[in-house]
Structure formats: structure tokens, C-alpha cells
Length: 535
Image (cartoon, rainbow, N blue to C red; front, side, top):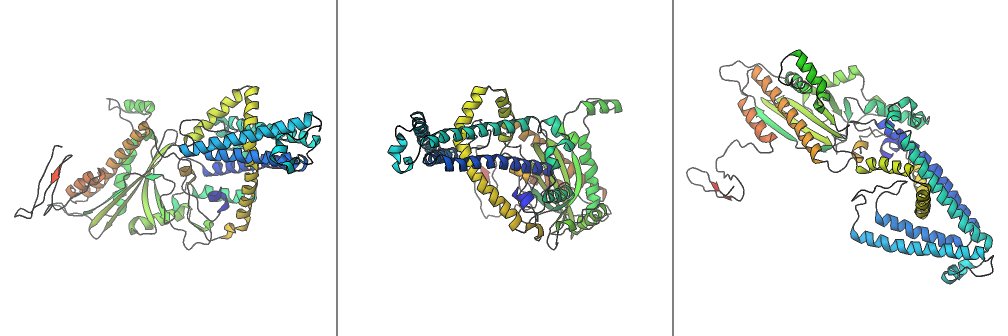
């Protein structure tokens, strides 16, 4: 919300595999719905303060203790809570502290209920029970009517909490159901007519999938995920013996890379070279490389612009930027060949940025793979949990609502202050007229898990090795066809892409091979040392 909606001056990071507009629309809708339920619970809090007299403070204390216990316990505090192992990710010390706070909160709440029941059922003929012992000043003036309100208002809060959960479950089952969500025109979140939302939505749709990428100095590849084995090599352009080399520019090399990478979309013909066999293999293949996307992009800084609307996103503007950037090898404006493979229903996105530059008789090749990890398990668990809730019986829902009421009521007060702070930042910050800035966060990266399954890692490795081989082969062919030596380039690619270091000179050096080896280096006539070991 802060990145896309409040900070209107910030450009949006590239949206790989998602539509940031719809994410924002549903986030705003969820905030509006949450604000309605928060207003209801805060109103009940006000009624409890006015009508429950001294009982209000005991109820407030019990809610505060249980809310602290929920915070110490960790995990989400919404209508549904992920229940997979390690979902909370808290230490044993915090668990124990949460248990102590929970016990104290439950005892306080139990005493509150007993005191209110005693006062209500005895028709004011006795004192307020535990409340009288705990805080005599609070019990003074707490009559039978106040005791009944002290029982009815929390029950109304529990009913509101239960209805809120039912509403969230219904939204997940209907509006966010895959078939319904596939139609943006029928999406109620998209029909919001707020002026700020309409303005921000137009900017995001213009930027998120554009080949012109506005970046920030601190994280230029924001939105593409985590860097994965990035490497760069430089090789001397040496004429092939007996040949007459022709000058090479960056565009020629890129055009040799492109068709080789595009061929990765075509599956093997399964033993037959006929066109019919190739078509049948293409129809049967499920390899995600068949959906490989390849395009060119230009990275620009927003420095010097007065508005995000002034960025050259038109086709003619991009063609001009691309033609200038591909050959200049600049620092601020950079041209990349972008190769993208979306797998596992776009949960694992592999993007490779390739940059080629020739300067001073040298060829420089930059290979920058990035991987977007799968979404966090919480997002998948919520569908299962909401479905289980809808299939559950009424007794279980009532017990859940009574158990979660104190913490939900306490969170409503906190959420009210947070909503007020959000509105203050949005309207008092003046961000809509601020100087444009690059993106500081990616919605897709914020929702990504820290790791991936072994199958997913294997797929990522396969995609990267396939693309890497085709890119290197394209550069090698361009060099060969232009009459330049390719041996040094091939050797450097093998070493650098494999994670090693290409050593051009071994003079006065020592080498070791295998594990547990011993290295020695002498300065004798041969200038070299040796190594031995059991590896």
C-alpha cells in the first residue's frame, strides 16, 4: 500500500508474473472492508466504556494481556492463521512468554465474566465478586444494568468477529475464486472510482510491463528476484589466423543470440525429423521453456524528470532509446536482452539479463540471472483454511469466535490508529506532486518465500544452463562468422560460467586439486609449485 498507493512519486517495479494493478485494487478493497469492521468494533468499545462502568477496565486489561500473548506468539493475526509447521517462526522464549500472558489473560477474563454474572444474577444484592477484591474503586457504582451490558457487549463483539470471518471466507470463495478472478470486468475491486486510485492505476499499467524500466541505484533489478550466479567476462578480439575480420557491433552479436535462444521453445521431435513429428512433440511437451519470453529492455533513471508521466513509453520513443543504448555502453542508461521463463504457475520466474558491449578491441559479456521464488506458504494455506471454515459446523465457529474475540477487539483499536496514520501520510505527505523516484519495493518480491523446493531448484538450474549455453553459442558464432578468434572466449565461458576463475598466467603460482590437499610454492627456476592430496 505504501509503495504503490501512498508514494505516488515512486515508479513501479517490473511485474513479472503478476498484475500489480489488481493486487493494489484488492488491497484497497480489503482495507475498506477492514475499516468497516473496525468501526463497528470501536463503536462497541465506546458503548462498553459508557455503559459497563467499572467492568470496562477489567475487560480492557484481559484484552490487553491476550493481545500481548498473541503478539509474543507470532504469526498472522487476521481472520485466518496459517497452521503449517514453522508458520510463526518464534523462539522458545517467546512461546513461553506468550503462554504466561495467555494464562494471565484467560484468568482475568474468567474473573470478569464471573463478576459480571454474579452482579447480574443477584440483582445487585451482592458485591461485584472478584472485581471488588481486585479493584474496589472500579466496583463502586457498577450496578446490575452495567453488569448486563458488560456481558452483552462482548457477546456482540464476538458476533461481529464471527461475521467478519464469514465475510472474508465468502470473498475468498467467490470474488477470488480462479474462474471469477480471471475476468477483470467482473471484479468488484476494479470498480472502485476513487480519483487517486484511477490515477495510480493508469501509471502502474503504463509502467509495470513496459520495456522501459525505471530503476533505483540501490537495486536496479528490483522485481526480478534474487541474483543467481551473475558473471561477467572480457575477452580480447584477436583476428583469426589467415582471416580478414570485419568490425563487430553490439546489435550484430545480439541478433545472433536471439534465434538460438528462441529455438529453446521448440521441443525435440522424439526421434523423427519430420515436420509432423515436430508438431506432435510441440503439442505434447509440457516443458516451460516452450513459453520462454525474449525481449529487449532499457534501464533508465528518473533523475531530471518532473513527473512519471514524462517517461518515454511510446513505441517510437522506446525504439529511439534502444537504438542509442544498445551501442553506447553507458552507466546510467543500459540496454539488456531479457529472457524470461515462468514456471510452476508463475510462482517460479527465472529472468536472465544479457548485455554485450565491444570497446577498444575488447568484447564484454554480462550475464545476470535472477530468480523469483515461490509465494509464501501463507498465501496457499489461506485457501485451505477458509474452505475448512466454510465446511465446519456452527459449534466450532461459535467457540472460535468466543476465543478470538478479546484479541480481535484489541486489534480493532490498534487498526483504527494505523488507518488514521495511513490517511494522514497519504494526504499530508504531498507525494502526488513530489519529484519522481525509482521503486523501493516489489510487490512480488514481498510475497516471495526465502527458498524453493528441490524440484523447483532443479528446474531453475536447467533453465539457466540452457539459456547460458545458447547465449555463449550465439556470441561464439558471431565472432566466428566475423573472422575473429573464438578459442579464448570459449575457455573463459567454460571457467567463468562454471563458477571458476580463468587464470591467464601461471607464473610464480601454486595450484592444488581435490580435497584436503597441501599447497607449496617455491621460487626456483621453474617458478611454480605443486600440490598433493587425497582428493
